[in-house]
Image (cartoon, rainbow, N blue to C red; front, side, top):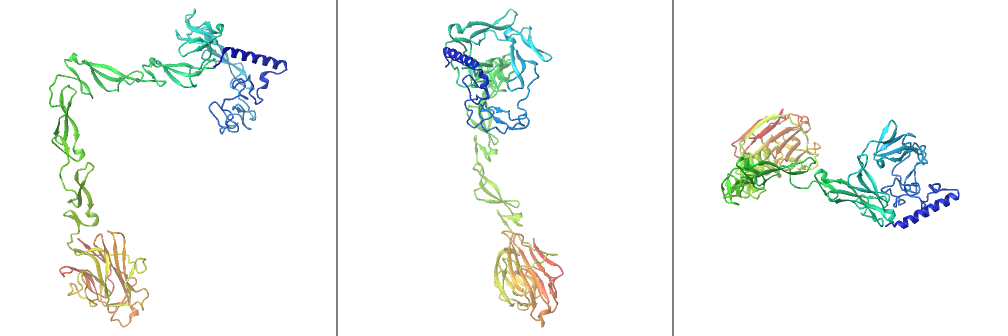
Amino acid sequence: MKNLQISVFLSGMAAIYLLLGCAQGSSGSDSCGNSICEDYEDQFSCPADCGPDTCGNGVIDEGEECDGSELGSKTCASEGRGTGTLTCYASCLLNYIGCSQSCIDACTLGESRCSDYTVEVCEILQSGCTGWTVGEDCSLQGKTCEVTGTLAACSDDCVSVCEPGTSRCDGDTVESCLLGQNGCMGWTPGADCSTTEQLCQFDGANAICVNECTDMCDAVGTVQCFGAVVQSCVLGSLGCLEWRNDQDCALQGKVCSDGSCQCSVICTPGDTRCVGTFLETCASGSFGCSNWSQTQDCASSALLCYDDGSTAQCAPACTDQCTLGAFTCNGNTVDECVMLGTGCLGWQAATDCVAQGQICTTGSCVCEASCTLSQTQCNGNNVEVCASNTFGCPAWQFQEDCTAISETCTAGSCSFTFSGYTQSTFSGVYSSISTSGAVQNLGGPYDDAWGNFSIPLFNFYGNDYSDMWISSNGWIAFGGDPGDSYPGNQSLPAAGNPQAAIYAFWDDHVIDTWYWTGAGLFLLVEGISPNRVATVEWKYTIHYDSTSWGDHRASFQVKLYEATGVIELLYDRGAWMGTIDWSGTVGIEDNARGDYLMAGSSFYTAPSSDIRYTPY
């Protein structure tokens, strides 16, 4: 609250102070720059000393250029002031005195320009550089400001500077917007509030004389609605906060809401409705706001306007087709009886049962009993299992592709259907497993030895086995204990045991670990189920009947592939020595002697190619 008498008293005291200062040979302006904000100085008359209330807290706040040593990364160069040291006044304004170019000319001395209706003149400011200063206000004379060359001046052209019926404060004088003799609207002085020791103040609608200056709003920048007008809170000429008219929303066909012009939510563009016999459509207006407009008079076409709540339309008279709220099946779609746009009851699609994995029965979606939970079936070579779908209904779902494990789908599960083997040759890469980390060294020396060992599940001639018998005499067998190592090889099919056998190089071998370093019988299983590979290696074997064991040796392997059932026989031809006494049998045969494949029965050295047996 600012009392007029107090203001007059302070003004008088300030004048006396200035006179005393002059009498002592100095003026108020001489003290500006002494880093002290004197009583007669403010942020505008002496920005070097006086700053905002928050000035001095070390943080650059709104209205401050700097604060103490905090310059906000500004330098003389960034401010266009050359080189040097940029500092901060106590008023939180930048001090360019330490810069090589302490100020910048804003204009050419003596020029003038127009700012709306006001003439601004280029003069030398206190900083020593040129800047624009406020000159004559042409609007006070009902004139306009015009520029000729580099000079601006008030023109005699008539211009209306205000709206009829409005008022404002000019100091303590109430001015009203009236028609002048020049034919334009202009401000006309009215009551002088000072004659009654009052102040002129704008209350948000009109300028009036008041006894005291009173804040009309809380903070600069806040907004409110005054009817359809947007008002903002500003600092008035008397130093109090007051409301200022900013925007008339009605001129845009809008309403004022929360301090801004907004479209009133009347309708959504594209919506339709019936008003009597008229069909109306919602469309956007010139200011972007939507409103209803008549598009058709249904009665003019002998029709009625019907609105079913979604789309209004002109339609002829009709009859009801069903009872409101009833449901029926239309194929596998549920139809509901609703009020149609024609104004009559009719069927309308409501739910697509197929999209829910269901069927329509008696007007509702239900699960189709196509399978029993956990039941399996074959779909080609894919295994499908009956499980609940996302809608809770039992339905066939993919479970496994049997072809991925070289099997076929039978009776709802993957199984290997064995028909036989094909024998082929190939060029493999022989790599000894004797030094592999997980290898099983079956020991030695061996002569006529055999034993049982576990392996990954392997299908041989249509039967699954999880173990096998390994003989030092170059063969492996599946099933029961063969009862002997069987050193004497035969042509296939062989009589007696072994049965269900793979003959890598069947002959009378001795694994002599004393004579050949590294010799042995080894087993290695590699990989992860169901893609494991079991490898059996006979390394550096010699023939039992040889009189000189140092002039010959043999190394060979059997590989069993879990996933495919393929059998590979590989031979280390690079390390194979001598042909003395060898007469090896190579091949495979089943456990009933009904099927066999033989590459030969009298090999005196390693076969020239590696051999592969592929099931089909």
